[in-house]
Length: 168
Image (tube, rainbow, N blue to C red; front, side):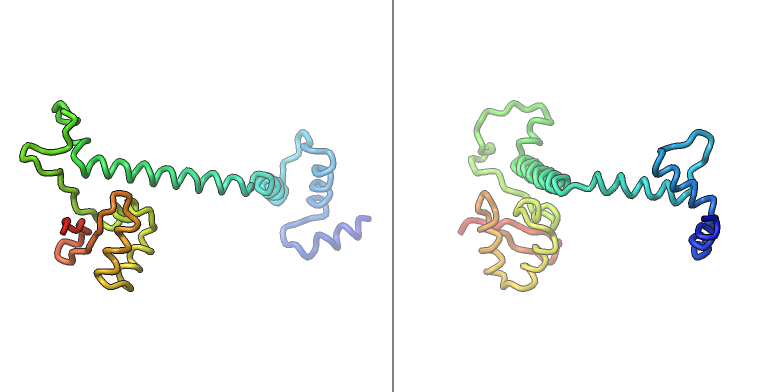
């Protein structure tokens, strides 16, 4: 038996027959008082724990949370763009009238790439790809179909922002 253990330990550098016996005993008996774990035994236990904890439902839950956070960010952007958040932060009383003093509707502000992607519920690479492959008119129509308020958006290369197209 000792010869078999030595033979098994030889191909693995840093392993002795004693290491193999201790690992086998720990696997069968659990932790042994006064015996230190070898690194490989600890790694084996960690791998087992990770294999148990990897769960496809966990990925679904994370994806669901990411979607909810994106929706919340979009709602926040909408509030900020419409001026509601700004008027409340200055302590002005909201009369319930969505129009400013001039009687015109509040103007939605230009958005950067990240904020527009959130608003349209797409990832930034998809937004970039659509802007690069579609004509300006097609991009505006695509963005209008994705926007919950049906704004069409165009890119202004001078300021690097996306602007809502004014009503025609």
